[in-house]
Each structure stands twice: as C-alpha cells, then as structure tokens.
Image (cartoon, rainbow over all chains, first blue to last red; front, top):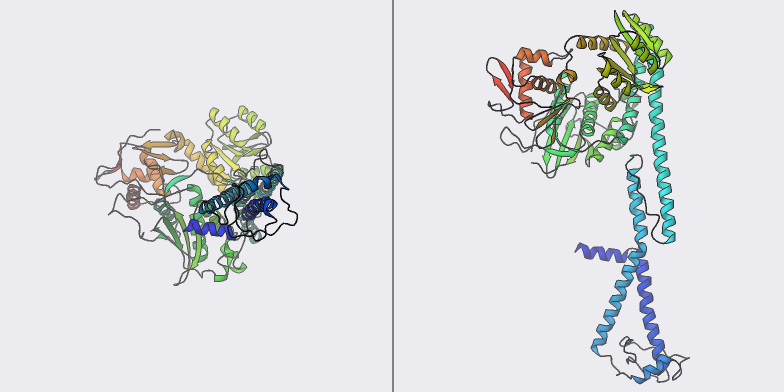
Amino acid sequence: MSGLRRLRQALWTDTLTRRLFLLLWGTLVLSHVLGFSMAHLGSRGPQPGWGGAVLVPGMPPVPGWTPPPHPMAAPGAAPAASFATSVPGPRMAPPNLWLDYLVRVLVMAAAAWLGARWLTRPVRRLTQASLALSDAVGRKVGLPELDERTGPIEVRQAAQVFNHMARQLGDRFEERSLLMASISHDLRTPLTRLRMRLERLRPDPVAERCVADVHDINALIDGVLDALNEERRQEPWQAIDVPSLVAALVDDRAEDGQPVSLKPATGLPEAGGLPRAPAVVRAQPVALRRVLDNLIDNAVRHGGCARVGVWHDVGCLRVSVDDDGPGIPAGDLDAVFKPFFRLDGSRSRDTGGVGLGLYIARELTVRQGGRLALANRAEGGLRATIELPCCASE
Amino acid sequence: MIQCLLVEDDVEIRDLVCSYLQGYGMAVTPAPTAQAMQSALRARRFDVILLDLMLPDGHGLDLCREVLSRLPVPVIMLTAQGDPISRVIGLEMGADDYLGKPFEPRELVARIHAVLRRSSGARAGLEEGGASVARFMGWSFDRLKRQLISPEDVVVQLSSAEYRLLSALVDNPERVLSREELLDLSQVPGTEVSDRSIDLTVSRLRHKLRDSGLGDGLIRTMRGEGYLFAARVSA
C-alpha cells in the first residue's frame, strides 16, 4: 500500500518531475488529438454532424468526441485527407480501438514519466550531494563531488559551481578549526611561563589565586582542543563489550575515591553466572569512553554522585547515568548541549567545567549512531541516557 | 647530582625551568634546538632528558626515537599538545613519561624522580615485557591502549587495577604468584591495595576473561600459594 501512497504523493505534490511529466504527456496527447482532428477535418470537414468515425487506421478518434468544424478545410486539400477518404470508417468505433487508445495513452504516460525522471535526475543528485555536504563539512571526511564532465551543459556548470562551493566551504571550516587549534595551542606557551614565574611568588595568597586562574585557562584550552580534535579524529570501529567498559570506568573512579557506583544490570541476558552473553555494540572505543567519561564527570560535578546502569532493550543498549543534583530546568534541557552554555554562572564557577562536555558527548554519540538524552527524574536528580544500536550478539 | 638535559625552544621557559630545577639540586643543561641537543649528548652523559615536542629544527617524536635507539636515557616529553592521542604516540615512541604544558613545577620534579627510580631498577612495562601486545588463548592484550580483545574480536575494557594485575600475570605466565608478589607488581604510588582487593580484582578479571574460576580457566587459584596464569603468552 505504501507504494500506492508514494505514487499518489508523487503525483499530487508539486515536483519538477510532475511538472515535466504533465507537460510531456499533455503535449503528446494533445499533439495526437490535434494531428488527428486536423487530418480528419481536412477530408470530412464539409459533412456536418459527423462524429467518431475512423479514417486513418493509426489515428482513431476519441469515441464520442465531436471535432469542431474546421473553417479552412476543403475536400482534397491535404495529402493525408486524400488518403483518409479512401478508408471510410463506421459511425461507432470498434472495441479494439479503445484498447488502441488506452495503450497509446499509457505508452505516452510511461515515456513522459521516464523522460521527466531523466531530466530531473541532475537536480536530485544535487540535492543528495548537498545533504552529504552538510554532514561532511568540518569533519574532514570526503567532501561530496559532482561529475563535471557528463550531462547537459547547464548541469555541468551547476556541478562546477557546487564543487567549487563545497571545496571553499571545506577549506573555510578547516582554516577555522586550525586557527582555533593553533590559538589554543599557542596560549599554552605563555601560560607555562606564567605558571613558572608564579612559582617564585608562591606562598603569597594572590599568587595562589593566579595559579588557580592558570588552571582554569588551561581547562578551557583543553576543552576547545578536545572538541576540535574529536571532530577531526578518525578512529577505527570495533565491537565493544559495553558492560565491561562501564564497569571499568566505574571501578577506576571508585578506586580514586569518587562517589561513582554501578547499578545492578537489568534486562541483560545473564545466563546464570558465567559466561554471560555479551552486550556488544559496534562503535569507536575511545569516543564511546569519552562520552561516558563526560557524563559521569558531569554527574559527579553537578549532582554529587553518579550511578551508572546498563539496560538491554529491543535492538539497542542503553547506558544511564543518574545523579542526585538539582537537575536542569525543563526549558534548558536542549540548551545545555550548546558549546559553552552554562546554567548559571554562580553554580558553574565554583564547580568547574568549561561547558563543552555535553556538546562533545552528544556529537560523539550521534557519530556512533546513537542518541543522547537528558531528563529530570521524578524522584529528583538528572538522568542522562545514551542509546546505542546493538549488533547481533554472539 | 642529577644531570638533566632540557630541550626547549622558548628562551624564557628554558631559563625559568632551569633555575627552578637547580633549586631542587639538579644540574640542568639547556639546549634550544635539536642540533644543540645532539652535541650536548655527545659531550656528556645525562640521567634524564626533558624534551619539548615542537622544535624549530626537528620534531620531538623523531628525536625521541632516534635518541632512544642509541642511548639508554629516560625521556620525559613536555608538550603543549596535551591530548590523549599524542600521549599514546609519545609513549609508543619510547618516551618514559609525558607531561602537558602548562605543568605544575612540582609535578615535573616528581616525574623526574619517578622516571629515575624506574630506570635504575628493572625497567618495568614496555622495555621489559618487550612487545606492547601480548596474545594468549585467542585473547590479545594491548598495553598501550590498555585494551583487551576477546577471541571474537570484541573490545573488553579493563579498569586500571585490572590492567595492572593482568600485566603482572602476563609478564609471569605459568608461574605461581603469591598475593604479596602480585601486590608488589601491580601497585602504583598513591593507591592503597590490600590482599582482599587483589582477590576482588582477580574475580573481576576472571569475569571479563569469561573464566569460571573452577580450576580450568586462565587464572587459577593455587590454594595457600596464590594465583597462576595458565596460558602460554606470545608477542
């Protein structure tokens, strides 16, 4: 049924294909009808009241259709007419002429449809390339390129313009991130000098505060460089056992004395102790680790603790990170993913963080083919959930 | 007296670090370029090299590899590119430690002492264990990425404690290690590890290695003696 719906949609929405199709089909049908009527009127014009006789075998009239009298027509005026007069037809069209008509109209329709698709193909390719461009820009994965050597002149010109634009755009983004990266990087040299000089003033409380500022600036540089590197880095995809990843991260933090714990796994295929069936996803290990690290950092920083759980669901695996903090006002749940967004200055200033953690986490989750969502829990606190498509286990 | 060679192109950082380390009783020879570093290395022997990653006449990574192939001097990399990837690359190239700029001056002193301690004793980790990837029973254990890959080619992440324990076991295959030995081999400064936590880590590691602990697995309990890693390890 969906095929039918799609056809109806294709016929009813105003597309280039439909316009061209209607134009071509209309023109073909009209030219046939006009051609026929001209030929016919050329021979039978003077006989009033005629309707629906077949004169030319290849050109049957539309049954029940009365052609208007032709003022200019005269007997024997056109060569076609003289041929027509030799084959006089009956007053009603025989049934096989209906079939003849139907076939013609359908063949014309098919030809017009194919023609329209053929003509609009470059436009569709352009659309696809534009979509690919928006994905590719800034990520240094291959920019889409249109074929500049085939197709009509106009299409080739459009392809050239598009390719030029894509390259320019790619270069601009590349320059922009290089600029950001080198500023961030070069800030570290003066910062190192500053830090070494401060060491000479050290027991001074002002110097202590300056050292804290140096750390803040460095954290910001780290954040920016991280975000830029993550966009450009290409890591191989591997199958990853998610529960072991989560357990390792939680164990490391617990060993560090952080209030991070693991929730008992629910819905995992636990085959009565060992060996368990692995919950495996296909992803980039360092990137996935980075996502979870950022979410756990946030929970500890803003929520005082982190409880991490792994849930198995149909076709996907969910990892949730809960905290006991104040949560996020409902209106800001989307805004917190923006770079450098902070809920309110007073809160973030003493708790640290530069406002790139969630931005990076979401970018990376999307790149793993997953989703990252934040929600306030009914019992208080925030829950961050990542959902990853599961690959067939075992 | 500890002899340091400081390779750093920024003149102010060079002077500041020199005078700071001299305050801790170290003799520091500054070198602004890769060339100066080479001639300093020819002139005398150093205990440790502090190497900037970006130099006007050569990249620190190439220098590091080149120096290490000739001299057994520990290298600490100082770099403004403090991202995890260049850290891994630096360690792969044979640097002994890696410190991002701006660093805490005291941290630098602590790292120098730590590196010297390690190089005076048996050089642990990479050099001693040889290859960075160890293979056993279809598993492969990458010590640089701290990654364990199962026979089905699935990445199994290890915590730091599990990583240290597995490193100790893989370095001593088919040998009974007592809890005390495992404690010594897997301890890092600044963490408290007890007999009980060794047992806990062993049980977690078994879980990840899909070892039931019933006596036929990879990590066997030798009653009253300790643990045995029962697999042949190849590079």
